[in-house]
Image 1 (tube, rainbow over the protein chains, first blue to last red):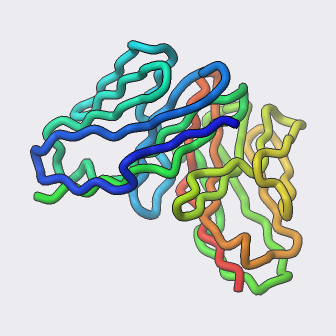
Image 2 (image 1 turned 135 degrees about the vertical axis):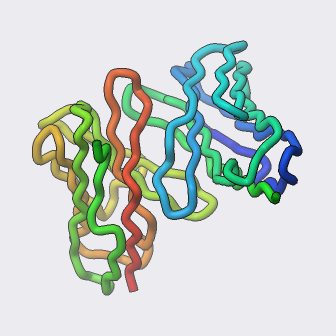
Length: 109
Length: 111
């Protein structure tokens, strides 16, 4: 069964304190791994797509990496505006993404 | 450019009542989706429409029906609402690149 597990469930950081979020997955034939950001009361917002092990993508203070079994979202020197829930999803066929439950990040000034 | 627009944003129903959630996208995307989001469970696919004129069941279709009215619009109907359908519902669309673009959500409470 396709499964996506994110850890930790919640992460509290001090401004400037770098950290990483984990997304581990089991899927037969990865066809893309996606990271989304979700602010309270809003819909998820697309961040990155990764397709193959070793691939990396960056956007401002965020960097996503991919191995054969997991992906990491690294947050470097976070700011309070990086506070959000970060969702990971894997594509299991042309029309289905399997989502993890998310990691809620809180960055204190 | 509005992206994906959902209505209503909030709704309270009594058990057994029916309602329709409306969704429209202005990105000329072929595919549209309805998800529900519950605490600790992640987003789960209810129904999707790969292209205009087609609809298919996702992971949790029971108790729901959908209509792809045209390329822009995809509606979700609850015929007889149950408390288990209390959730936040998201509509999404995707084009050739595969990433999903989500609406802001519709928060439904069934009493």
